[in-house]
Amino acid sequence: MWSVAPVGAGNRLKGGRVRPLQRKEAALNGSGESRWYHERPLVLPVRGRVFYPRRCTMIDLRYIREHPDQVKEALRKLHAEAPIDEILHLDADRREVLGELEALRHKRRVASKQIGQMDDQDQRQPHIDEMRSVGVRISDLEERLRDVEHRLLQALYLVPNLPHESVPVGADESENVIIRQEGEPKTAKDFNFEPLPHWELGPRLGILDFERGVKLSGSRFYVMFGMGSRLQRALIQWTLDFHIEKHGYTEVYPPFVVREECMWGAGQLPKFMDNIYHDVEDDLWLIGTGEIPMTNLHREEILDASELPKKYVACTPCFRREKFSAGRDVRGIKRVHQFEKVEMYKFTTPESSYEELEKLVEDAEAICRALEIPHRVTQMVTGDLGFTAAKKYDIEMWAPGSGEWLEVSSCSNCEAFQARRAEIRYRPGPDARLEFVHTLNGSGLALPRTMIAVLENYQQADGSVIVPEVLRSRMGGVEIIKSDGING
RNA sequence: GGAGGGAUGGCCGAGUGGACUAAGGCGGCGGUCUUGAAAACCGCUGUGGGCUCACACCCACCGGGGGUUCGAAUCCCUCUCCCUCCGCCA
Image (cartoon, rainbow, N blue to C red; front, top):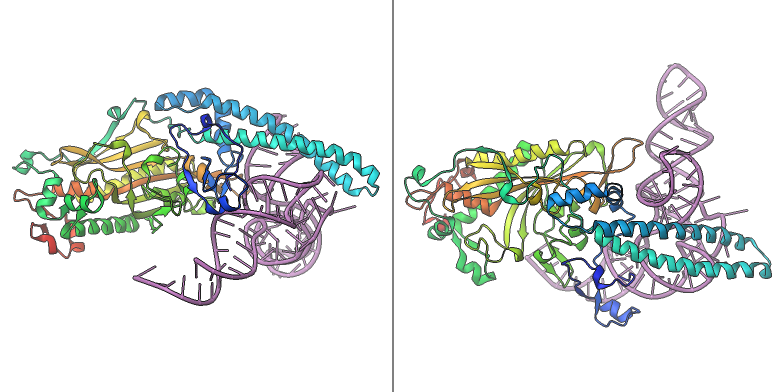
């Protein structure tokens, strides 16, 4: 059960919340007074155990300990905050307590062995009495240690990944750097008519239905019909096959709901707690991206150096509460609660991860190119990196109807950030120490936005949409989606 | 949903309060022997942390957590996971 030393509210995660959890068994059998609800500490559990900093997060802690100024400087560039001073303080506390505790444990161990070898009860008793008092001190120190480690770990989990040196410094997304662009954005002049946004185009064709989405599930939900649904399915299959056959990825079909520790491992918790759907009944979490199950495929594993890099691709639904973007992008299918995404994921050695990041971006771009849709690659500046990435590129497709560049892919190198949280390691050589792998993820691509780009780029004056050539064989040879295409 | 059985090192597997510093075996690494290999024999073997320039040393880890005890793989409580059978079911 989750019994740890009591921690004051001030030690709880900033912005987090402590969720009451139903634990009938615990309430019935446990020692606590609470009847039906237990407060759960916000500590990463792994296989049901509390995940102490002595485990994998220690490497990160050691870096903070030895380079506090660099860490603070990096956080400043990220425009992020983390309790570094608190971490340093707790770390010092921890080591002080630990030193004292271990000395006492050693003393007890030696003495206990001697007591076991004594026959004479009168001879034993004074030693037993002494060790009894040592045991009390050990218990006290252990409780202090638990408390300190608990607080230390909570603080550590608030530290975002630090940026790679090659990432340009910038405050926010407005300063992101355009790396390259392929194709010219199409304008009304190119079309010879005013291109429609997909939220008009789709319903007119009878392939997108927002009213029924609301009827079934509420705002930000939608229904696709006929050739719309078929177009998406063709895109998914074609994209998966593309990455499998041309880029050497292994297809994965993972669960779409996961345990809480998967969320911590992938870096979704604690930061994005309020953006994730969570089933309280069985304590399962709906994935917001395929990155989550794929990160955890090798959680707590030691990979063989010879099998790196491991490259996976999966199409998964993604569920997002979008609590942080209320009122933004409310029209169309650009920002929705449920969508499909083809996700690429790599486990690599530290030496090759940046090379693999470039390849990852190229793999995603190849999809844009094959679809013949203008796109560009942008690099995130430090202020727009997010919580888990050390370096990140976005790929944007031009949507002429909506009149904007649409982020269809995001490719990140998380370095050891997720590997450390999920404890994914490999042995670099026969006698080498275990090291954390690097993990990378990249959409290849996100379906609704790719659908938007296809619909808006391939639309014609009469409201019909040409099917991109590469998809036709998967759509029964259909070349044009017309308004009578519902049953097509 | 019901009943039962389990969880020990890379793997198999012994271990009911003190020599567990975890038996034995398999695998792996090194060596002896050999022209070479096999076999045989000998030795070694995990993870994390603390303290260290380093070595050495110390602490923890037998599914997780808590407890009893001078002392716990072993006893108690609790949670999780896995397996088998029955029931239900796409």
